[in-house]
Each structure stands twice: as structure tokens, then as C-alpha cells.
Image (tube, rainbow, N blue to C red; front, side, top):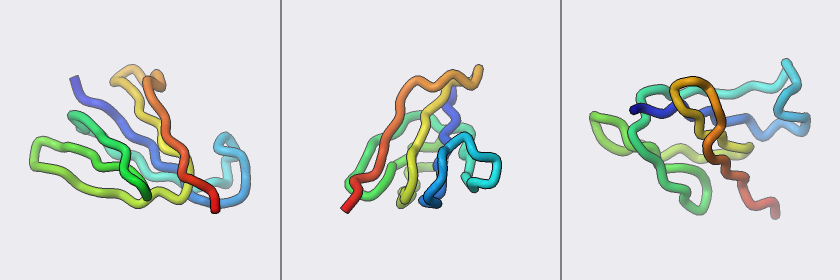
Length: 73
């Protein structure tokens, strides 16, 4: 089973605001949270992403199974 990860931008607006930007990463096998973001494990290896906004981990059906929020200064 692979996961989908949605990384929200750090824009000061609600995550469900249609103007807020985000990136989607599919084919994620597993993930780890790190101090400034997430480490996503793909079949080709790990990639680290700095996250300035919330991160949502979803299963293949689009249901959120985990989330992470950056520490605000």
C-alpha cells in the first residue's frame, strides 16, 4: 500500500481555503517527521521536504491517517 502526502504552504489562511497552495506526493511507502518537515520514503529512496505548513498523510482512498504541524516560533 502506498500513501499520499499533502504538504500545505505556510500562507496565513485556513488549509481548506481554495487560494492556499500545496504539493502532493504519491507513491510514498513510509514517512518520518523531522524537526523542519518530513522525510518521505519512496521506492527509489528517501527525500526530505521542509514544511512551512501542515502535512497530511493519506491512504490510497484519500482518508487522512496522520498529520504533522510545524513548530511556530
